[in-house]
Image (cartoon, rainbow, N blue to C red; front, side):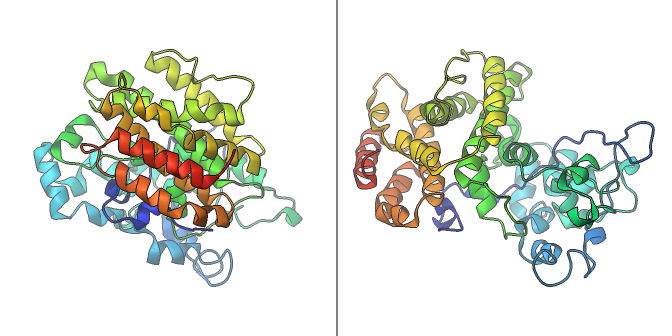
Length: 391
């Protein structure tokens, strides 16, 4: 089974996926053991994880810090702000120093965005996106982190102490989506790359420093990630009155909604919540969040993955509708090919090999939004569906 998504292997395709890095996430107050009132825990820094007896050693479940420190692009996120390209984008947006500006460091150097009261010690801002940006500030949970179920301390106990539940696809998507999708309109106009959030593919592109829980599915992660992305883009679009929304959001939102509407019935045969949400961004935001939560809690089966795959593969006719604007169809194709890629990665490897050339052709046709040819893409999608075989 392919470990990395196909779009990572194709030079120039959606290159913005590599440019900006995951988010701090919304930090909620956690209860400290023995305390009367909950309070926000403090950040300790990645060195609190790096001892050889914890995550800085050798062997399974002992080298996570080493993997992150030596191989993970998140470790180098802060250095991106010192590139000439970043300086040019910042200058066009009226930002004097991107390496020290709140709008930039919140994603590229989260330690620099942590207020003094939220730190137990000095945090190294050059760490980029480090352990606590994803797993939550560790003051309350680090002492219990190494305790085992044999000692009477379960994973649920660790979560109650403040560890973020990244085994849950909904929580994981929420942790990553803001910095992997949102870029304010003025930054886009200044030259910042547009971002595309795709949870499963971006997780697969990471140097693996975790073990997926039993029953985990890349197809489920993909669908949950798409639903969370729709929720967020609907929220962002609702901010348009305040001038914050990217003016490309309507087509992006319509494309995301279409992908989820096409596939929703394959995993929720009892109803189509997203399809019936109505046109208002607020209603769509609520419906997408509901489905993301529900999908994350499903027991996933190969039949569900196959259903999603065939629903997308059988959608060629939509690209021949003259009443749908070409920019919207281009955005649909952009999302569709990423979905096919991840659903195939979650399927039988023999099936992947069977349609490899047809998928590469779809990627090629979706690569340039301004040059998108709906008729050519529709024909290529029909060839893909035939190669895939019967539903």
